Length: 376
Image 1 (spheres, rainbow, N blue to C red):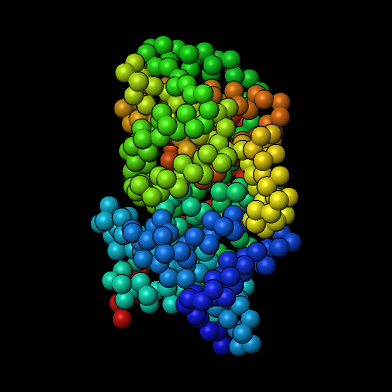
Image 2: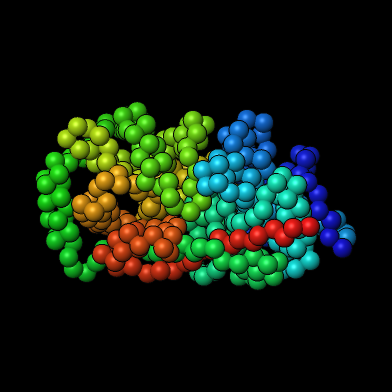
């Protein structure tokens, strides 16, 4: 028999947060989130409280041992934008047991129906900037810090409850191509001159954010508007993102392109990979972990692609070539082994085609599932 409890007490919160850390303690591919960041979802001033309803659940067996967890989310801004009545699930972790998984999903489904929803989908977080998608390929590959690892049996548990595929994301490793780098660079220079474009400059990352953050978020809202799972940026989200950027972003791994009127028409931000730096401490920022983190930020050997956005009016003008040239510049550093794309929608053909310019290995795939809630 499985008991489902809504997470309310401090003890239940700790159990919720610690469950995947215990499950994957010895797994070399699992990368934990920062523990302090995860705790924020239980705080009264959580950045998404204004735009979301949520419920956190723990599952226990008959002996009181925790065997699973899940979060249900109603992203009101997303539903309003898309004229939908959807609930999302995220933070799904479970032992290989259908009864436990079904009990968790049943509770979320009941909660969603009571809130007037007609569909459940996921894994999707509070926004598309959080970990999303269920890993369905690449179980022997190291996760990026930005994405969640899960065991291979998760897919069967989700599908056995009636969920079906809605969309997939692919993840790739990128290296410099064997030939053609100089040609890409020349094409990028031609595009920049033809449209009177130039790169934005900044003294440091604080100066960069002060100059470009407002235009950056406006551009992201426009460029990502039609992509699956995206939501408009709130002031709280912007502040949280800027705070994170100040911690890990380096000027060598960002690029902003301006038109002749100093308008931002393209921006790209990459992150130094901190996956291995946070593994040993299980996401806790201990003194030793902080040293590893700072070392990874200052001397990365892998870069993770974060956010790339292009003004829609420039999509067919070759600006993607400039983006490719800038990434090739980063990959040319002898200390960089490769770049990780993170999640790219399988039907986002513009971004999928862009990576054909590189030596590319598709090594991971993630899936978003959907289920219509049956009428009672």
